[in-house]
Image (cartoon, rainbow, N blue to C red; front, side, top):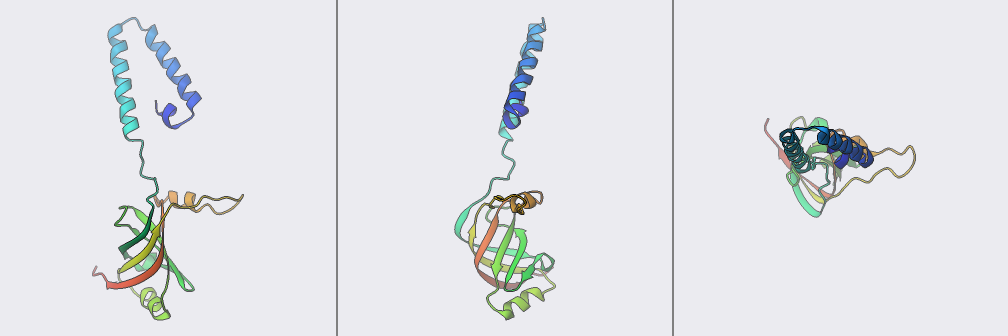
Length: 163
């Protein structure tokens, strides 16, 4: 059933056909009915659990306060990015932001304790790779269970969080 729903449809139809023929070949109607009931229950359970959490959570103009650990923050010139748990989606998100000033960059990068940061911007789905041999950001972060980036227009440091 799961092959039919989430895999190759022709292979799934073939497997269900073979399964049905084997069931019909059974002479005991009690086994036939019981097997059909179990199959239907299994199909319902698989269909109910089909959502695996990798659907992107998109939102424009959102504000979020997150806890960022110093070893997760990377800076490149006036830009930074870090991974933190989102309060909006409840999942890990990669945050991209620009430092407002050199003093803000030094304060954030020089910290050795977790920071509370408020970000304003938009959360959207990652763009897939469109060229051959292009870095596929969506596939890379998928393995880390990160499905959306947050592009911050404004970064505000709230202070240190006690350990």
